[in-house]
Amino acid sequence: MNAPVLVLKDSLKRESGSKVHHANIQASKAVADIIRTTLGPRSMLKMLLDAGGGIVVTNDGNAILRELDLAHPAAKSMIELSRTQDEEVGDGTTSVIVLAGEMLHVAEAFIDKNYHPTVICRAYNKALEDAIAVLDKIAMSIDVNDRATLLGLVKSCIGTKFTSQFGDLIADLAIDATSTVGVDLGQGLREVDIKKYIKVEKVPGGQLEDSKVLKGVMFNKDVVAPGKMRRKIVNPRIILLDCPLEYKKGENQTNAELVKEEDWAVLLKMEEEYIESMCMQILKFKPDLVITEKGLSDLACHYLSKAGVSAIRRLRKTDNNRIAKACGAVIVNRPDELQESDVGIGAGLFEVKKIGDEFFSFIIDCKDPKACTVLLRGASKDLLNEVERNLQDAMSVARNILKNPKLVPGGGATELTVSSTLKQKSSAIEGIEKWPYEAAAIAFEAIPRTLAQNCGVNVIRTMTALQGKHANGDNAWVGIDGNTGEITDMKERKIWDAYNVKAQTFKTAIEAACMLLRIDDIVSGIKKKQAPGAGKAPSKPQIETEADADSEQILPD
Image: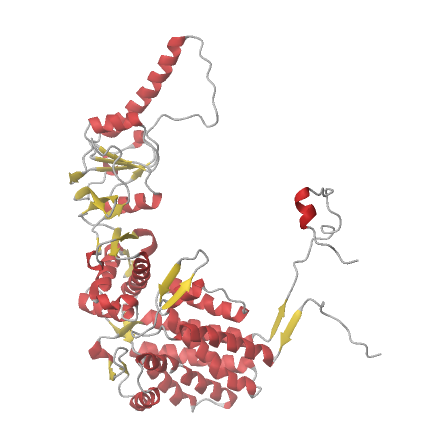
């Protein structure tokens, strides 16, 4: 009568209820603990071995989590968080994880008391709205053209990174690069495309101090015939092509049968004339530099060098776009469609230099470049990779500020202000949601607390002192100086954060915490369903070869 009914297959594992909540919270806390020590200026570095045996040394939250291979599904979704944060605003990847982990940690107590997860989530979302409101209140607008403020801002963003010991160097590079490629869309909007128009060239060797932002572009190519062609041209006229300057080959293999021997000579002559006419069309415009994305035959090379034109072939499409942006040329698809307006005259200097043991072409001193190259020099590959990652972050921050010029205090001051405001508001909330709301307020303190821990100061004293200062609500700018662990006014120390980085951090963290709390069942071990009639009979008889005969497992009788 009461025989157990099997609903799920044996192969499926099902966990449900509070067990799942606890498992998810544990997993998320574990992820948060991995990168907790990388928050703040006194942060530790992590060294990761990737699959290829290479090493990554970094303290960029996203870079660390990207390399990790996790088994737990909840932990995987935490990693997605830092990736979203990285793509959206480029900074705050560590804070997001720490905050989300803390949100889940404080929720654990309520789950033990059998609160329903949706109640907790509702309280959290309310807390999020109020937190964003507080951010709006304490944010201050800045003038984008004021370089010193920008510098302070970007510096405090990279202050937590490994390159902070090089001081303003990276910050300068980032601001130069982003303000170069910014395009005004009108209505006060700025579009800054970091990915397409800022190229970071890493060249091992030299010192980090040699790194610079070029007023133009550089690429890893030499001219086609180094001996004959000029390698330094002042005010070059540049033509960009993306067609091959060689005789067109047939689409597929073409056979031509020639009856007379003279026809062969005629054929060759035609090819030569075709190339010559192409070169002549280009030379009409008196260029000094011809760059093509495709091939360039010896003959074409001869015609061009005879006319004193330097040529570069097989350039990457992305590089070509950057050159076009920098010197104001238009990329032309067919030589016969060239116009005077397509010639780029914005560049001040074309030069081929040898850096390390490779040749690089520079197109620099451009008049109003809309693309640029950041040249990074450094002692080792690992160092360069880390600098590049930090530069990405710095450029993202600079971009955010150009897009939305509002600042909030750094050093945990924002979180503390939010926290104290939420605590005061929580007393006005009716019913059961009051407690999770207050817990969310306390969770925001994770960021300043972690900062204090990483500085190695007395955490409890520092935190109580800070809470005391913020409880009066008089000064929203008091936070921790991450280098010394002192409690200072962030305005004086110029420790800022971009408003949209903070807002995004809070949103992402709380939404993720809610999502993970709502999970109450994990079913694992689901097999892919086979299409009906697919897995029944193999379509063709399988013939054993010697290779599988010996590797076949011996089945027990």
